[in-house]
Image (cartoon, rainbow, N blue to C red; front, side, top):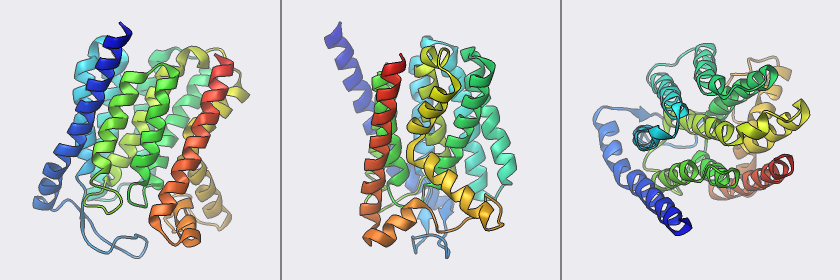
Length: 297
C-alpha cells in the first residue's frame, strides 16, 4: 500500500507540474490577445507590459484537482467555491481597481466558507478566519519580484506533507513549480492579483484542514504562534508594512516600495538573491511551525 501511495503521489505531482508548465504558455497567448496586461509604473520593477496569465492556470488546475478529490469530503467543494471567489475578485481588481475593504470582505467570506465546517471553538474559528483572509491578501502584497510568491507557496505547500496532507500539498506545489518556469528568473507572465491571492487562500485553508485536530485543542497562545510561523514571510511583511504606513499617517493599504523584497534588493543588489533569502527565511519559519505542531499534536 505504501508503494501504491507513493506512486499515486508521484503521478499527482507529475500531472500538476505538466499542467502548470504546459498550460501557462497558452494562458500567456490568451492574455496578450485579450490585453490582460500588467503595465509598468514607478512602484513596479518591470519596465514592459507583462501578460497576467498564470493565475488562470492555477485556478483551473486547482478545480481539476477538486474534481478528482471531491470524494474526500465537503471541504473540497467549499474550498473550490472559496478559491473561485478569491480568484475572480483578484481578476476584477486587475481589470479595474476595487476597494480594498470590498476585497477584504470577500476574502473573509471565502475564509469563513472553509473554516465554519471545521467546528472549531469560537475564538479559534474567528482567529483562523481572520488569519486565512489576511494570508490571502498577504501573498498579494509580497508578490513584487519575479518568482517570489510562487517560491514561498511551493515551500509552504510542501510543508503540508508533514501535517498529513501530502496529496493536496504535492499537487499544489508541483503545479506552482510548473508555472514558476515561466515566472523566474526572468518573467514571461505574472500571477496578477487573482493568482497571488489564490495562492495565499489555498495554502491557508489546506493548512487549517490538515491541522484541525490540533487546532481544536490548543490554547490561544499556541494558536497564534502556529499561525504566525506557518504564515511566515507574507504575514511578517504585511505586519511590518501596515505598521509602517499607519505610523506615517497613511492608509495601511497605501502602496509603497518598503516591502521586505525591496529592502533585500537594496542590500543584495539582485532580485534573484532577494527571492533566495526570503525563500530560506520562509523555509526556516515553516520548519519552526512544523516542530511546534509536532509537539502540540
